[in-house]
Length: 152
Length: 187
Image (tube, rainbow over all chains, first blue to last red; front, side, top):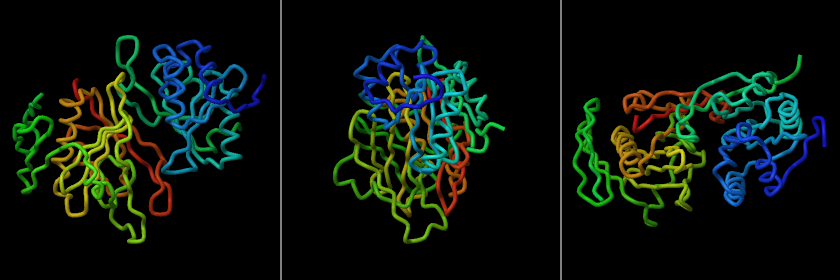
């Protein structure tokens, strides 16, 4: 599957997809960590949090509606390329009527480039929110409305 | 194991040393309330229903909410990702999204109408419990300024505003911004 075609993944396929990714892209994807979590724990966390997972080429995408405002969704991507993320945002806007999006991205993650290319802006930083590789790391919150993410 | 409560010199609370094995006891000198955290029991279920907003860090009855609005219901603890403590007669303190690798949790406090005077002590007790009983590194939670969140109390307790997510909560017929407040406990 190539281009920006999005396909829904079941939990097992999502775990396999995460496992196949380079660690710097996969760590922090919806708080998952394929470096320190085994497949069973990854599957359990995906099921517990209710994240919907998709593939777009080699990229793994995820979304979870905000229970306090169903027109807003938390989104995540494992690629620094903006096209897969833009395809997900377009789909969420068209078929789930989402009007705004936010994302939690580890500080210095290469994935941040995709969000900035899609019109997301920083709305805050969670200090020392993640721990891996021997130290705590900050997490940046990105936000965009549907209008921000449209190509002009 | 006995909790040791260190007096906070920046607060007006007088801290009473813990007298039980697991409880965290705080006495608020501003009001006659004594705030004692203890574990959840099934007979505490009525305290888990109230007028606060869902997932609010310091949940008080927001002003201007019509009486027809559904109350918020907090579920009893289901697994190791939650820690639910009770403020007898006043409300609950809930640590959810507990993560023992990152040593963090999202904090929710819900106080019944009439127990708002306990807010300061409840918040301080919760942070003390998070550090000394749960050994957490970080605690965070949501505050909704448009619903009258007492952000001054959060700041006095040592939390700071870390982010503002626009349109994160539906309140009063429109989406409103929600703030994330947090604190590093063992800095």
